[in-house]
Image (cartoon, rainbow, N blue to C red):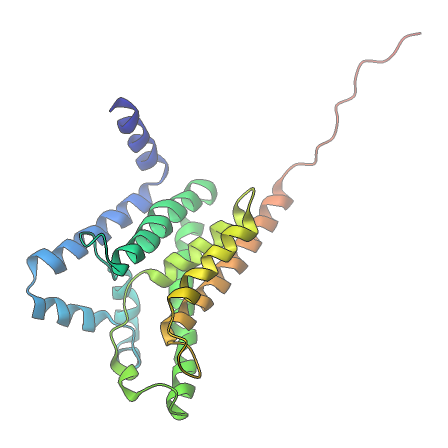
Length: 232
């Protein structure tokens, strides 16, 4: 128990922003699932969904509000939704975001997370418009529920994969495999959330590459110290 308490204390002290964000996400999840009625929770989710209609009417509100929720479950452990929770909330936020915060500071870590969320969401918009124009997506996509932290989580997972000291390629392959294996590939294009997750991974890889290059440039050159002079 002492070791667990010490480990938790170290985690909180070294990743305070991540811990605060986790607490906020858990609070909004409990609020929606345990406090609000089903109809009220549904209205809340639709209000922060980043679909085309909402992005056109109130883009700032939905882009910011979507970051306050995660699309998953904490109780149905045998479901696919719980596996998604483990990836986004667990590996994405609790592990990778915290690791980036400890190693590169809260500003860079949160910047990568938010950048991935915004870029992936906005870059899927023209793809959806093209797909709708060619009848590749149904018109219901315009107002389909789409909210949560998964794009940001995918971005920090991708950045973290490149920053690993070993097994970078294997970790990067796992990051890409998550949306590829879980996506719907039955049409001309995969579903737009799969496209969004793949775009988020690209953003994360680019950010990870920049951080890796910056770290290498900042590392001091290893110059051997001169030893004592040899006296014959």
